[in-house]
Amino acid sequence: MLIVKRYTVCIVGTKGLDDFPPFYRPQFAVYSAIEHQRLQTQFNVCIFAAMKNIVLFGPPGAGKGTQSAHIVEEFGLFHLSTGDIFRSNIKGGTELGILAKGFMDRGELVPDAVTIQMLESEAGKHPGQGYIFDGFPRTSAQAASLDAFLDAKGQQIDAMIALEVPEPELRDRLAGRAETSGRPDDANPEVIQNRIDVYNAETAPVAEHYRAQDKFQGVDGVGSIEEIFIRISEVLNSLGTTA
Ligand code: ADP
Image (tube, rainbow, N blue to C red):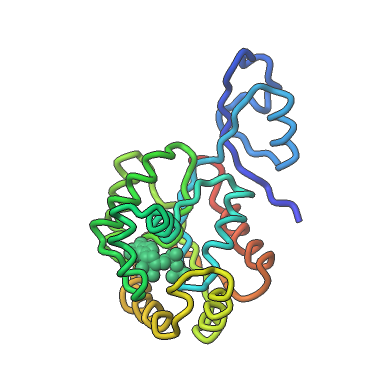
C-alpha cells in the first residue's frame, strides 16, 4: 500500500533556494514518504504537513484515539484529544482536572465554556501544523466556537471523518478496553450507557453542522485497525494538496 503524504516545505539554515531541485522549490509540494526521508537527510529543511484540519468523530469506543495515532504518524497532523487533555489534568491534580473528573466519572460532558477555553489554549500552542480534533466538538456550541476560532486564523475544518460502529460492538469494545485502560468511565456499564446516551442526544447532531457545510465523510469503523485506517487515508488523500 502506498500512502502519499502531503507536505509543505519550509527552508531553513544555510541552503539557498537554488540548492534545491526545481521540483521542490514551490512552497507546497506533494511527495511520498520515501522522498520525505530523503529530503530531510539530504537537505537542511523542516517539513510540515499541509495544513489540514480534521474532526475525527464517533461515539465512545469508535476508535478515534487509535486511528488518530496512525493519522499523526502518516499525515503529520497535530493530535488534540480533549479526553486526553482532561485525563492529563486529572493526573496532574490541576484545578481543571478536579473540575472535569466529576463529569467524566459520571459519563457526562464537561461544560462547554471550560472545554472550549481549554481546547483553544492547547491549539494555540501548536500553530501551523494542521490539527486532528479527537473528541471535539461534542456539542453544537463547541462546533460553532471551533469554526470561529479557525476562521480568525484564516483556517477552517476541511473534513469531519465520522467512524460508524454499531452500538452493541461499542459496548463490547469499551468493556474490553476497561481491562487495560484503567479508565473509571470504561469500567462501569451504567457510565458507558450514559456516555452512549449523551452521545446520541448531544453529540450526534454535531454531524449535521458539518453535513450542512458539505464536509461530512462517514467511514465504516468496523474491521481491522489497518482496514479502517486505509478508509480514512482515502478520505484524507482526497482533500487536495494545499492549505
Ligand atoms: P470516549 O470518546 O471514548 O468517550 P474521550 O476520551 O474522548 O473518550 O472522553 C472522555 C470523557 O471526557 C467524556 O465522557 C467527557 O466527560 C469528557 N470530554 C471529552 N471531550 C469532551 C468535550 N469535547 N466536551 C465535553 N466533555 C468532553
